[in-house]
Length: 179
Image (cartoon, rainbow, N blue to C red; front, side, top):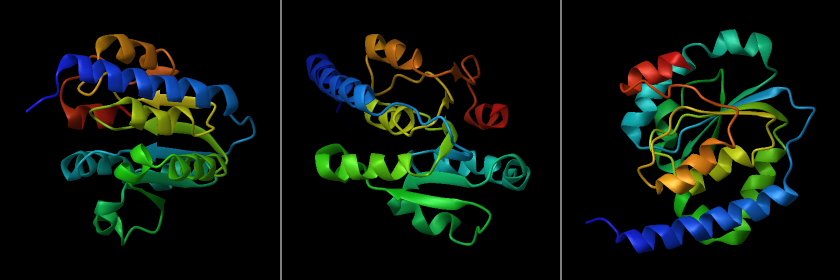
């Protein structure tokens, strides 16, 4: 059962206002040298984006460290990979606990990031906030999937990214190959 449209607008408005306020105080950090991938989707989304993890050794030649942010429920999925550092995130705590949210964003910003890729298939303001406030100078999104957004907010958020990488590609696997 989906939410009524007015509830979606209210939720999006509140989240967008919070993001806008945070953006005033949390500017990009200009001396970054590390790379961050974000995929807060479900297990299928993570498996599809794992194709990128096969290329981590190539990326580590260009970037000092590579990080991958995912939901803490999927911690065991990549536990044997040592070539990348994983960051585990709690959606519920992040969305409803302002102290956790601020602490988490400050931790991300300490990673000294230069590039962030938001690989999450179905973006929302909360997930976009992670990438847009990560401190990276160069921030890319995989696609413009407005599943959790109204078009008004989706288009505004898209404009905050340097580029939407797989804008006209429908297949999720092909989108990740594009990255």
